[in-house]
Image 1 (tube, rainbow, N blue to C red):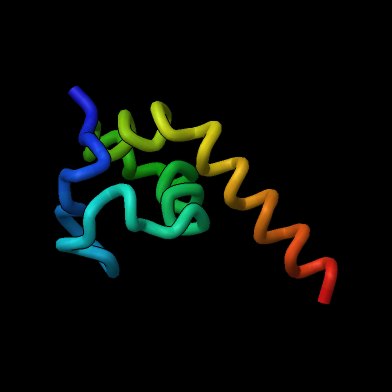
Image 2 (image 1 turned 90 degrees about the vertical axis):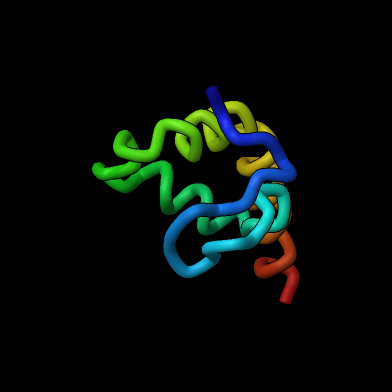
Length: 67
């Protein structure tokens, strides 16, 4: 079972933050960590939200390029 948007992060820099409020860059970084398999609910949330994460990262990239 995956976390939902209203569940809170259980560890790390953003512990206690609702999943929906975590920055896309952080979720992307977490997804690439070899130990994320130890946190299946977090990993499941990231997989479920992958499209939204990628979209936010792309928007941030475009904003940065416009500067």
